[in-house]
Image (cartoon, rainbow over all chains, first blue to last red; front, side, top):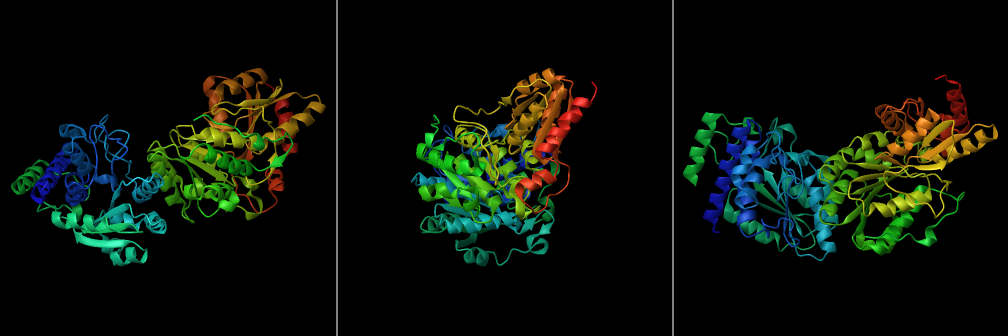
Amino acid sequence: MNTHEIKHKANQIRINSLKMIHRAKSGHPGGSLSIADILSVLYFGGHMKYDPKNPEWADRDILIVSKGHSSPAVYSALGLAGFFKIEDTLSFRSLGSSFQGHIDRMKVAGVEISTGSLGHGLSNALGMALAARLDSSPKKIFAILSDGELQEGSSWEAIMAAAHYQASNLIAFVDRNRIQLDGYTEKTMGLDPLSDKFKAFNWEVIECDGHDIAALNSSLEQAYTTKNKPTVIIANTIKGSGVSFMADQVKWHGVAPNDEDLAKAVKELEALV
Amino acid sequence: MGIELKAANAWTIGDKLATREAYGKALVDLGDQNTNVVVLDADLSSSTQTKLFAAKFPDRFFNMGIAENNMMGVAAGLARAGKIPYASSFAMFAAGRAWEFVRNSIAHNHLAVKICATHAGLTVGEDGASHQIIEDIAIMRAIPTMTVIVPADATEAYQATMLLADHDAPTYLRLGRAKCPVVYDDSYRFEIGKASILKAGSQVTLIACGMMVSRALEAAQALALEGIDVEVINSASIKPLDSKTICESARKTSKVITMEEHNIIGGLGEAVAACLMESGVGADFKRMGVKDIFGQSGDAYKLLDHYGLAVSDIIHETKSILKRSN
């Protein structure tokens, strides 16, 4: 797909995510919209090998979404990629639905690891990266982390260990939207200078605009050339990206849009599509 | 995979060694038999005995440093990718520090990581209360789908370690630092979910796990000299619990005493109590364990004695329960 088509898919992810959250009357719109472009580039930009008809295909690449609350975006991307019918995702968060509030690998094809409790996913990704190396497999292990979850000490245990084990098959995105539940990250518990922190932990660091498809593509291409260390792509994003009244607004971390909000948001996003 | 038990690791009843020593040897035998077996440790490989595996299979050994949460998360990832991970640390850190990683990264993901925790209970000894976890059985058995095994001796620890390679559920294997007498020879076969009657008897049922099994046997021998006939059951498999064997024995004796190197809250005793109550088996009942207090530094065996888990305490409780009228 070309960059225009990838962006188109990203906005479809956004629209479906908001519909899911609206229907469920709960969920996390802000962080779902902020990673829509990253997900779209990975699934539709030719970066990940996967087979929706055979989700456990041994040679597939792996994506672990550590910020499990961005489940609407993950389910929407997987639906668009053909793992299941995207309409099914509208049962999100209801009793008996496969589409749990936080992603659950036992219930949804294409979800590699169940997450939700923050600060786990990078450790899981490192385990899969070490396993791939033991198997002499060329597969790539991607992870998407939130910026807020880097406040968890366990994140830094994993960051230290990934560098120690020179896991060059591990590529982590940080969704650097600078907002967490209580407010701006730098006010709640500052993370800057984030690039310097990763560099000090012996990671290859790339920064880019997390909504620029071409920039995400080239960042990934650059990451594939990293030798003997893991790569982090710090994707500078906007929480609620794509919807004017949600963009960079703390309140849209975990609040569902009402009928009017949804109509307005979908109208804006459809104009982009 | 078929498990092949190595004759070189057969012990004789009465030999004294720690369950962690048998664990270390089993890992090496497993490593030989299955290239998917990987071992993780958190800077305690000399103590947990995973160093034996590390020396022989360096590529499949991951020292994760003093960072138990990440170790459990990485173990989960390795399992998700088809490896058979054994993750070891002291029980205080494997179960205590890393509980939420065990719960969410491992158990909630239905990944069959083997959490093999050494230095459990009071018999860590001189290191004292900060390291003497007496809550681990409780917090591990509370996790949905988690198997909890507390081997009584080296033979059982060795076999449990080997069997776990094929066990498709997250498992907590509780191992000790201190040497304890071997109670099983090579003819024994451990099974997950099965208790073992080490001595049949008619008057009182003693149900023990871990270090307390050999003490229960010792008490049974002393009581026999006084004409008191007790049954000794090793309930190494705490979850799943062998309710059939336990209930049959309780029906026969109507008097049950549990004993464990663990807080009386949440451990073997409460598992057995719930099993008896729900099965409608009425029995006089006594839990022996650490009575909801922290431990302290001291010699491992003296600590057991100090906290009410001496052979003489078992004898005393047995005589007391016999005096209770039904």
